[in-house]
Image 1 (tube, one colour):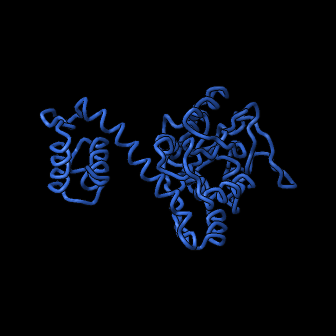
Image 2: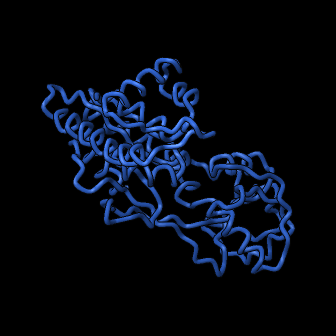
Length: 299
């Protein structure tokens, strides 16, 4: 049994489809099938029940995936810990982050890390918060940035500045709304904007649920001009004057993202999100990962 066979078996356990797993691994389906058969023959047990459609894990397979995943994690940790012994710090830094935070938060951080550690390869894994929470528990990243809560029995947590939500209204749609002479944020009752078209996130997302609650409390049915998946797309649609949208203030205030938009605090809304840097407890932390974290906590 080798690391590649373990990696292949774990990949197949996630898809339970040889063709899909082979595509994700970048190998042919016959090659993957041969590796799995060789692994099963070596172990003397069947890991996958191919008599079912779709294929399922056997009890032995379920046990194997859990414990083999720990083996891969330990191997990765060993390699990470040895990177510090390499001359020139020619290691790798892998950070899990949501796409919208990557856009406004990471460019300056990565630039400064590369200035201090020019030989380090940096990889940003831009995924949903749910995906990041799962994979950081498995030790897939040096660290990730996610919203709390998380399982702090498994993860070490360093809190960042909380997100505060604002309503971003295209300037062309804000003519009938109050304006600030000095550019400060004004507070507004949500029922004052019921005539506006809105750009919203898709159902079941945290910010969409909040938007629906705000509309319900203000007693109006919103005019939804566009429904999108991500915060960055919502921002782009507001920039294009499609409609008003809810955005984290920490995102919109950076890099002049509020250009052509009027921002409002929402009265009676205490909404905020608590982002945090998280990593698996006891995980090896390289000097460049520590440096990146120190930069993020200074922001």
